[in-house]
Image (tube, rainbow, N blue to C red; front, side, top):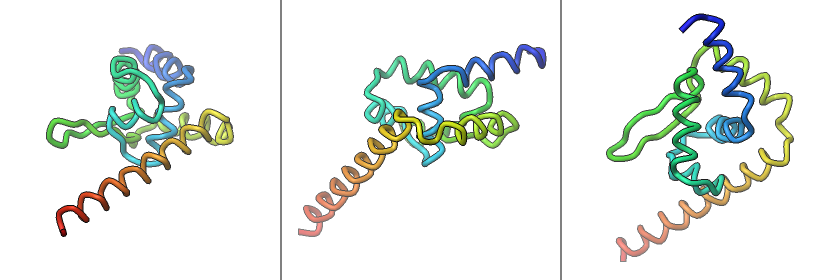
Length: 122
């Protein structure tokens, strides 16, 4: 891939609202595809397609844990452009709503974990 082609693909990746929302969530914490599906209320194939493109241009990295894949922001030159775009739109209503969804998911996990340990300890 030529440098110009790589730059074009990177800009295309950042030019999509859904991908920007995914990146904003991954900037908060590492998440699985299932987590992203729940927070963004989108189907698996749609999330996977976006994650594949983000991974291809070097914005996202993944790691396997058993049968699940977890995604996070990659450390690369490409992320500087993303960070600039994020800082300029940090108060976007979509970002605010997504972060509220992430917080709700964190609380749900915490409650599920507490309930599990209460059952096991009993």
